Structure formats: C-alpha cells, structure tokens
Length: 621
Image 1 (cartoon, helix red, strand yellow):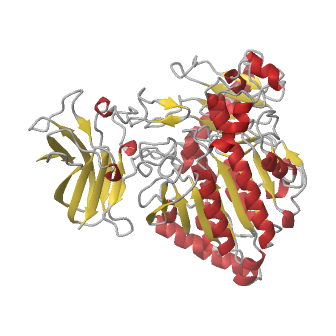
Image 2 (cartoon, rainbow, N blue to C red):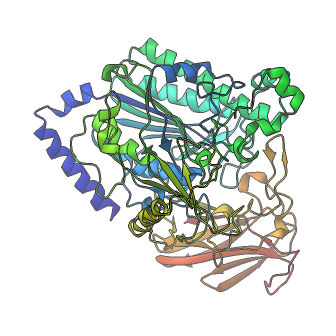
Image 3 (cartoon, rainbow, N blue to C red):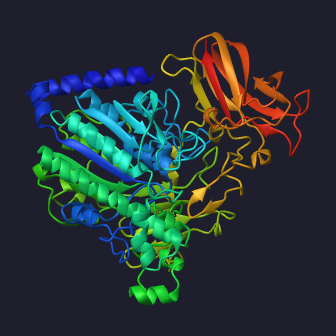
C-alpha cells in the first residue's frame, strides 16, 4: 500500500513539474535549502528572547530577531506524536502515532513524509539526532525518506531502545545501516554531522532535519556549559537543563557561520522550533522558578514574572505550557529577515504544506492532511486563518479514547478537559479566554456556556475525523533490509492496555538527570509480547539477552523460555552465559514472541525471581 502511494505521488510530481514550464534542473536550481531544528523538551519560555531572564541564548535570540515568529504555534504535549504530525502534515492521531513507546510510536508506513516528498523532487535528505518513530524496519528514517541518518535509538539517549551504555558522551549511534562510535558530546555530534552533510550537498537542494535529544533527560552536559548557571546559584537540575539549551545555542552559531562561509545562507530556509512544552516547567508545576530559593531570586533580580512566558504547566499537559512552542522562520531569498510576529493559531502539521509551497512543489500535498500552508503569511496577514480551531490531546495509552485529556483552541478561547484520575482532573471541562488569561487561572465556562458547547462539538467532529486504526504495528523480521532484527522491551505490546514497559514503573533513579531506569529491578517486570511479522520463511537464530548484547551481562537463572504463538521452548542456561540461542523454523506471517528466564524446569513463572529477556535478536540464516 505504501509503495503504491509513493509511486502515485512520484507520477504527480513529474506531471506537475511539466506544468510549470521549467525543466527539473531549473526547478532544482531555484529551490531553497531547508534546515529544520527541532529541540527536545524545550518550552516556549526556555529562551531569552521570549522573556527568560536567566537563560543565555544569544544566537537563538538573534535568529528570532531576524525571523517571522509564530507566537501562537502549537504541537503535541509529548515528543513522538509531535514529530509524526510535523513530518506528515496530519494531527498525530490521524497520522497513527499517539504514544512514545509500546509500538504506538511507530509511524505507519502508508504515511508519506516530508522527507519523501522533498526527496522525490531532488532534495538530499538527512536526519541528525532524534527520530523516535520506530527503530526497526520498516519504520526507520531511512525507510521513510531520509538519505543520511545519524540518530540515537528510542526517545532519549541511554533509553532501553538506544545503543547500550550511551550517556551522551563518546557514544555509539546509528549511522544508516551501521553503528558507529563518536567522540564528543551528543548535541555537538548532531550538529557536526549535519554540518558535514550540508557541506557535501551545498550545490544541490538539501533538507537537514536537526533534532537534538537535548534538553531531554537525562540532563547531562559538559561542565563548561553548567558552570555559569551554577555560579548564579541555580540548583543542579535547573543549571543542567539550561546548560543543555545554551550548548544548542552555541551550535546554532557554528551552523549559521558555516552557511555564510559556504555562501548558501541567502537561499536557505532556517527554522527553529521545539517538540513540546518545557520539561523543566513540567517538574515545577509550570513555574521553573519554583526550583530557586528566595535568596537566589533576590540575587538574580527576578520579579514575580514567570520564566515560562506566564503559561500554565509544561510538557505532557494540555494546558498552554504543554504545547505552545516557539516557531521561527528565516529565509533571506524569500524576504523573511525582519523581526515580525504572527499571532494566528497555527500548528506543527502546517509545516509540510508550508515547505512544499516555499520549495515550489506545485502539486497538491498528500490527500487528507490537516495542515494549511503558512507561506503566504510570512510577510502578509492571513484572513483565512480567522476562526480556525485546533485540537491537542494527550493519549499515552494503548488504545486511544475520546475521554483522555484534550484542549480545543481558537484565537480567543481554550476549552480544556482532564478526566478524573489523570493528575488533577475533575471530569469537568474548563474554558479560558487565553489573550486575557495566559496562565489559565480563571475558568469562564459558567459565564459562556454556549461557547463551551460549540467547542465541544468541534472536538467531537475532530475525533470522528482523527480516530486511528488501533491494530498493532508489527516488527518485520527476516527482511534483507534489516537482518538480524533487535527487539527491545520498551516496545513490548501492551497487556490489556497496561503500560508495563521498562521505565514506566516507579523504579527510576535520577541523580542530576542521570537515570538508571529499570537496571537492578529486572524481577519487578512481567514479560510481554512483541508482535512480529516474518517476512521470509526459514530457519532463524533467536537469541535472548537479559541486558543488551554489548552489556555482556550473565544470566543468573537456570532456564530460558521462548514463547512463539503460545508454544513454549525451554533451554537450560550454561553457567555464566550472557545469552541463550534457540533455532527455530518460522513460517511467513504474523507471530507473537515472548521470552523470559526462570529457575523452573517447566518454564513457569515465579514472582520476584523470574526475569524477562529485555532484548531478543532474530536472524534469518
């Protein structure tokens, strides 16, 4: 199905090029380069330009002063859904992504991405940093339109799906089909690799998607970047969070200097944005200053103004602080160099059609997208955006349902709903006049019930349009594009809707942002299935690991158990073995795989002693 969609789209591109009267080469020569910087967990208020009087971001501030700034721009409250919407032009549910793990972050292969669209018209495409839409074939970035790939695994450096042992310093990352070791700090590496890609492709149009993992936890950063914030008297978590952003800021200067040196800055669209609200604000009830004691506040001369642009809450929230983010666009050749604010309601799924128009791709975007092009309002007003409604929802469950937290927005109002049992939810909707109450403190639903009813109807219609197919996406094993296939426990399928992945229970230990997650708590977890699809029938080696292969962790149990479609295979574990290998003929088609280690010869499970195999490798022989 995906192949047919891409072929059809290619045909449309070809005929639309003929219709312009220009040759393909002429169009290529005039198309702008595109650099999209999308940081991780940095909120609207985590920039000096937007009013944060502590953080040092001179280069982001300079870019903001040379850009059209969308001041009412919204994304999803968490990362994978936000990234799916950005790349497809559809809201995250409509794109088929609503969680950050359990396989519900895989971007369905039938979706056509911005990278695929640009690649079809001659762009070189590269991603550097965080993908978080599937680490296995056919969901990887190289399967979805990117020529050059340099990324970490999972949703953050060091998480379960990442390369074992990564801690943001001198790590091993995924380079196209390989793994490569790098020297240096993660953010520096992402920008350095992007700069190499840009230099290599300076004579043809390119799309560089620079997606740092920073400032996502764990909050690890070079000491030189932390020291200025420590000297202010900031507590360690806050100092580290801001230091990670200042490091990004330094890299943006290096990037812009290279564009100037190469002589390609004039016809390069440079975008800066973030993927959701502030993780710092999320941990301090929306107000990062809650980290600072009164003496430090006085020393810094802080007033009562918020460091989060006055917004309520942060990452994960459906209040404004969870999803309103900065969005700056700079493009000298397109006349976008002046400081200008656009306050119209806009969203991440507008990026795809906007860049298509700016890149002179004259055919229509993929059908059924939710975004609209913002190209015409970079320098002009946008009456067509008046009375627009946008919905954000926070699902983070196995099966989405309309009773999860959501917000309905228009230019004037915010209608919010949080069910009971979800943080401070009351199951009572709220209504805020956002331009007069940025902090969403005065609920006006009793004064304006008719507005609330109208906005609820908007949500109901949106849900009917957006509700996704909830069939679990499967790992494809045995395909030549990726053999062997690695399965990580963070992608276990949900058991009866429960979120039982490693890292989700209260076993996380954080010290200055360094997380040990589930290590040392292996017996706290049950074992859950991975849904797989065997691409080619054959004999497979299936290797079970307690920790990942490169950890060389011995398995302190007697028996390994492999369950395939509810049929058990049991094998004795050799002393000091770090893995157990089964050999099995797998038939083409759908399977379910589970695995664990036990002391019981019959393979049965004992609470507090049996351990899952957190990693499994399948290789077609």
